[in-house]
View (cartoon, helix red, strand yellow):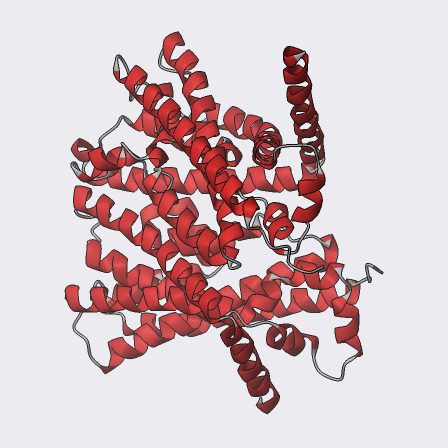
Length: 276
Length: 258
């Protein structure tokens, strides 16, 4: 009986997932505009680093090919790994009282929102990633997208990519939950996001940061997001280091989920429904 | 103008109703652009220069572009949100009122939280001005002011174009972000860093270089051609095509009827 219940619970969230995913796939025109934007963005980013490379090739901490792959993966998978990709619906649900309906459902709020965020991000990424990656693959040598450094790198890219994705969603859950504690979600969101943007390596890839400072940052949960899979892909992280990084990702995922669940439970105990 | 001033005071009072929220958002704005600064700082610590521009040059350049962008965004926020204005038929109401639509859109929304970004720009100025070896005199100060003003006008025009396109598409077009947000992000380096293609685009299609690159050369003493300082004024001619597009859009306007 317990087992059947378990499967049933799982199905419930999976159908939420499917619903959101299919809804997300409908916005194809928006996705097309997004692809063009992302492409231009990646292109400019590559030009910036070209200018720096011309100044002093020796100071480049990773190969140009690895950097190009990093940038294109970043642009293509933006929807999966960017912490600013938050759902306004969830914030509204909390601030305008819609949360009351959510609480009536026989579901776990945390798990449901988690699945919902995953589906939303995945559907956006699915629509956007392929055109960018394909075009990037045809760009000339140091600027284009290459195949993974080795089959092993490719496999671990997938594994750490999934882990990184889970860490991102778990972190965003904390941002949503913080809204229970303050009614000024915009401020919190911006402070949290701007901090994480930098620490996760989306402003400048982490290898470009000065020594010492970098080692410290790489221990934080934010370095477990895009930093790990994108660098494994191009062989910038290899050997035993892959396993320690993946282990760290797993640790942060569990820690963030634990914290998120605790905070949700605490918030729901004292939640005040705002009129409506 | 007096009416605009009233609107201005009104929006200021609204913003001050939620002081904590305002403060947080302002700090957020400050931090977001601080990120970019950190990125520049670390990259230039590693490479020391890019195309002959050192840290203080880049910081000064970023300060200028950030300041002009924030000014434009604070005052032109109404155009940035114009897609919503059209889709909820707010614009139908505007057409009925005895004032120009542009005036109503502009006075309908003012984003004071952008002051956070402006503060950031001021910090950049302070750093760039003290650290760089620009010989500050009357002319160079005027150049700096013209750059910021010219930049605000060009960014304002881009917001106007963005809104005009909404007449045709109802929805805002994401790729316009490249021209506004993208220019703010990538305009931190003098534009010749990106190579010829981008440079041409930024001169002939959207006149970024007229308020950024050319006057900047004069400002930092890389050229003696004094007339470069007046180029931002020329860049303001960008107003003409933007306004024209707005007129065409207005004529094309059909209510969404919701």
